Length: 255
Image (cartoon, rainbow, N blue to C red; front, side, top):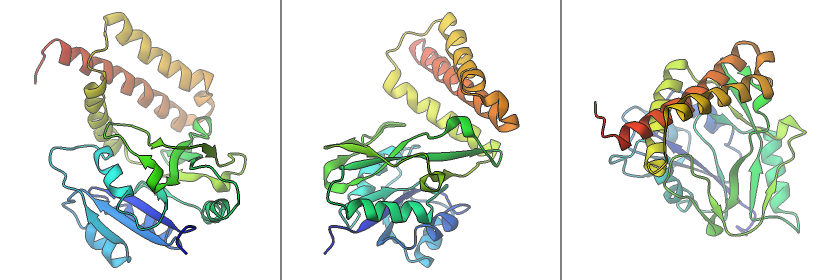
């Protein structure tokens, strides 16, 4: 019977630095599908050497993962799918919870999973539980091809309890270089879905300032040392550069 089996889906593009560790932590699931967007490093070779099933989504002009998400999850063999990024870790306790959950008599179609985020190799407590909708029934799910889009679930969505931190997925720390590169890509793609927004000088100042205040003061980043400060500044910068790029697009500015 396949009803209670789980496929893990990992989308990749040049993830050779982190993929092996991620795969090692999901090796006890029923299947691991790596959906690669034509990596130019040895990501595919690593995936194959670890026994993953590799499928390819043509990268084309895409610079975000979302267009490949829907293709990836429907390439999975089994009815339940767990989506994991190549820089995330799944604990043994979470794996056991998910199998117990789908074997229970009453369960939802999808599950929000708490995530522990690490910045500068420190756990950012004020960002927890940062729920991510990553576990669901394949045939009742679609994933829109927009930056930071969430999956559309045809059915009820439940939550993994956040009180037990062992049931949380772990988002590993990334270098400042990588973080800035991804921010540049993500903010550019935000313009696609927000190009009709009105942007003023006042909004460019107020929105990022409030985002910094929210994360550093209200959510307690001030008590998290370097990681709390870095996260708050990253959040403010993301908001600022998104708004600037929207303004740039509307006013015809070019490089």
